[in-house]
Length: 163
Image 1 (cartoon, rainbow, N blue to C red):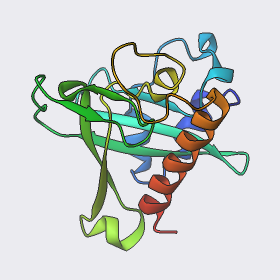
Image 2 (cartoon, rainbow, N blue to C red):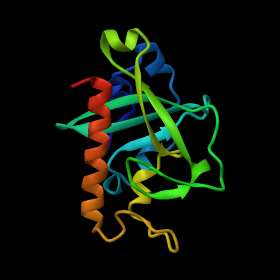
Image 3 (cartoon, helix red, strand yellow):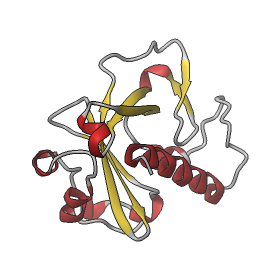
């Protein structure tokens, strides 16, 4: 992924108001991130713990979505799989995230959701071997896992955009 500036991030948000985008807390040290090891930029808002954001480059431009995490966590005694990076974790580290739709449907309160790593660190998770935990895509090369993550995130953003 190419580097994204603070201004580009705020302008990229498609499913929240300009005021909400200007008030969101951005990740610290954007300049220090390893952009080449990311399929997208994802973070949780430090000032609003249930709020999260994802920005993905699409056709050379950043497209961002605001997310809301579920109020409650799943049981740690179970396992769950992130539907973006397809890694299995203890269920309390996976969260149901919902995103308000764009346009009239979103203004009417409609949203879509999916299970995602609670820390939104999917780019790191596809690059990390998890011994003892069977992973669906573990036998694939990093490039293939990266392409799959990118494709599944694109489909989720398409759902938000209703493309």
